Length: 376
Image 1 (spheres, one colour):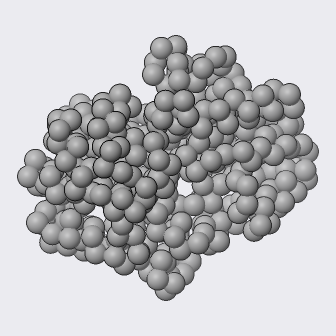
Image 2 (cartoon, helix red, strand yellow):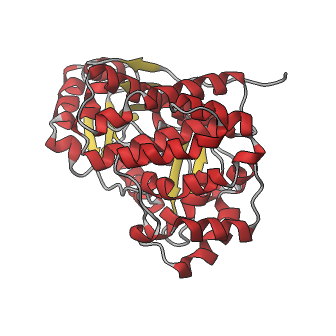
Image 3 (spheres, one colour):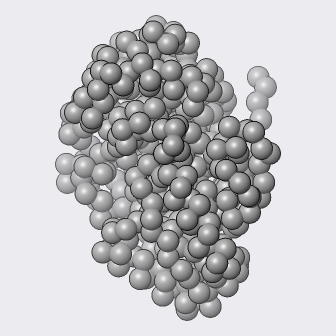
């Protein structure tokens, strides 16, 4: 058995942990850019509380909120310009996955000149970044637990990750209390994304004992929490479980990467701005059905943690969960057209080659086209 382990993630977890944001931020400078959404953090009062905590710790702040659900490289350049103009020492991401990814990318762009896609596609060597502090408000992407920032180039439709240890947060403040304001439709989508991170990291050919442990525990925690929370039955214990599972998902893909379901979804959300978790809901059952015979032992382990028996009822368990969280949906309902399939299949091999290579089955371009058609 040969593997390497390096995941320098610094977590502060628990109810009320957000109260530490001022004191912790003061360790990295005197001026912070807060990257946040256009609405939720403002309406909930979270942004105002964070600004107050920073002020009380002697940290000035400026807000950047021009971030789309699938963050655009063009928005990152706007954030970089503001960070430079305001002479910011650090970047704080306060929001969901798109916000945290944008915060990471802005912190990187502030220290690296030129086109971000040159770094994403490894045409330029990766550099340093401003210190990053993350406080997730959705339990889905797990961006607080890795060095990935998923960005879309609006000129090409390419959706691909900037990946660098320099954009791993100096501190991630993971407070389950911050998750409670999510609408149900957001909760179901981000929760399923977290589940897919755990399942795909476990299936990945890059997996190793530590990523497997983290991923399998994440699957179990999501099984014990997501449906209850979406149904309005869960309490603090369930919020803790789902929030921790989301971070576990981010950590596990930071070690093992994602596989075909994510790789095939990214062209769809890059092209049509599909909500990522909903896109995964349409694609994952179909992708897994075509994959089980190539990794039956792993699919059996996944199934058992979802309450099933073995690999034969794994997809059934996933579909049952999607029904329970009201996320049984096809790609057509999300704006994907039959005429998009050829472009998306070709784009998979441009932006998702590594994810496809990690999967137990090596799908051909024609097989990927079939997977899209079956998921419409």
